[in-house]
Every structure is written in C-alpha cells, then in structure tokens.
Image (cartoon, rainbow, N blue to C red; front, side, top):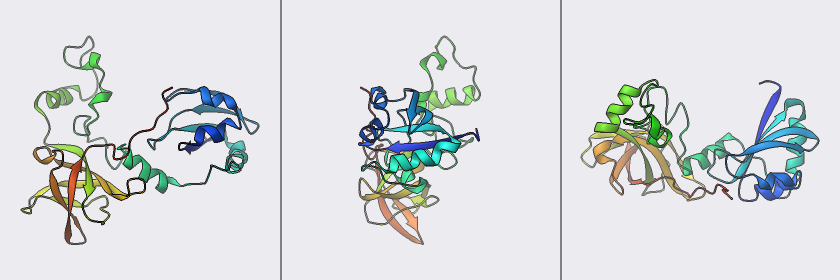
Amino acid sequence: MPERALLALQGPKAVHALSRLDAGVARLVFMTGGPFRLAGADCFVTRSGYTGEDGFEISVPADSAVALAKALLQQPEIKPAGLGARDTLRLEAGLCLYGHDIDDRTTPVEAGLTWAIQKVRRPGGARAGRYPGAAAIEAQLATGVLFKRIGLVGLERMPVREGALIFDAHGHKLGHVTSGTIGPTVNQPIAMAYLAANHALPHHEVHAEVRGKRYPMRVSAMPFSPHRYYRG
C-alpha cells in the first residue's frame, strides 16, 4: 500500500502521549483498533506492536506521515527509535522474527507456537487437519520434535549473535542461535536458539561459541521481560 505509511508508538507512556492528539485512543485495548484523527490526518490506529510493551501502530496517509511524526515528537515522552531498538525489545518479549527464528521450513511445534493452532483444527476437533502441513504437524504433536525453540541467558557478559553454535559440556553440537543481543531491559545477554529437545530443559547449561571461544548460557523461559499489553 504505497499510499499509506506505518508509525509505531511503543512504551508505557505511549497512551498518554497519543491521547493528546485524540483522547479516544485510550479506550482501545490490546489488539483492537479504529479510525482516529491525528494531527489533521485520518488514521487507523491499533493498540498493538511487536515489542511486548503497551503501544500503538498507526496507519497514516503517506503524504501526512512526516507531519504526524513531527507532532508525535513534540510530545515530551516520545523519542525516535529505529528497527534495531525494536528488535532488542521483541527478543526480550520472546517474539519470533520471520527469516531468523522461523521460516517456511519451521513447524509451529518446533517453534513453540502451538497456541496458534486452534483446538478445532487439532486431532479430534470438528475441523481437524485440512490445512497445509497438517499431517507433519499432527505427527509432531503426538511424538514430539528433535529440535525446539528455546530461550538462553548468558552467564558471562558476552553477547551471542545469530548463527552461533551451541554445544554441551563435552563438545557435542546441540543447535544454533537464531537471535541474540544484550537485552536493554534485563541488562544481560539473551538469545533464542533451536536446541536438541533432550537438552531444552529449564535451567540446563549449554555453551555458545563466539569467535572460537565457548561461553556458558542457561536455558530460560520466555519472555525474558514480562509482556505489558493493556487488556483493560
């Protein structure tokens, strides 16, 4: 949609700042939306985002995007941020990034996304199967997977980036990192990885290889930082 632009406003004070432009946005709850008039532009606003924080995504006519961005930046709570900053927050929130943590070769079972498979579509449901990949996914639901997506927390202050290999204490390869950074909120190295299922156990210690040296990491539950969605 080249005639539209998208601005994302994220964080615990987002609702206070955006309400100055249209007080009605405060009535929205997580994953709801509607039309609003912001800085003279007719926008569609949803209370959503990919950071794990409360916030809004604003669809605005492309020719009004700069004016709206300037109006937002005049609010004292708001500062500009790029996709790199957003990426650190979505990782802290345990949210997958397509092309990195999931792709067209990953199943929802391997990725820990089985919540997205409706009960009605699961074996025994009224509309079981009948979707692409159903046979393979149902087999994994029944028997498990060899590798699964997990969270890792670094035990030393060394960021572990995408592509780093994961080993056990005896040097056996267990998997690889798909996303990694120093979490700005949790203030420690965090990563997502695909790990051999028999090692993907809470608090299990593994080692990530960075520039030829191996650093200890511990399997962790996700999200690393709690979600703060506003549900009313």
